[in-house]
Image (cartoon, rainbow, N blue to C red):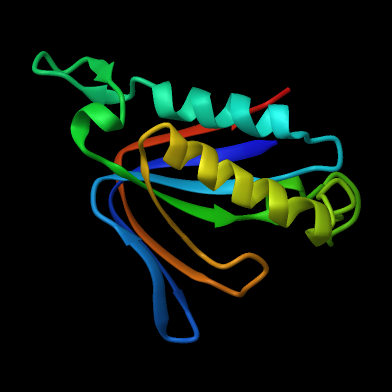
Length: 146
């Protein structure tokens, strides 16, 4: 499992002209799932993200987690994180899990974040989405299960 985390000041997902999820301060999570991912991977990554101390304290040091700053999550399924561009000019996506495996794990991931006390907004699995964000920092991290 790979999650590209972007700390943001504001973000939203729009599908066919309709906003399906929007947050102010928080994380935009682009979530990629591969064939070998399990519910344990999902729990590990959710707990890791919820506990990351990447928000500044009074001294300007990254010392606060998302719940301490009152932030939220915008979670977007993103199979292209497993795109392989090492050969040719067209990406191969054979490492990305099939939708019937990936969607339940993505849903579980969002529920795990909620169970950890975070407010979670989402895009729609498998949809063409317009993702808009104002990156804060910028702070961008890759969080992986393995």
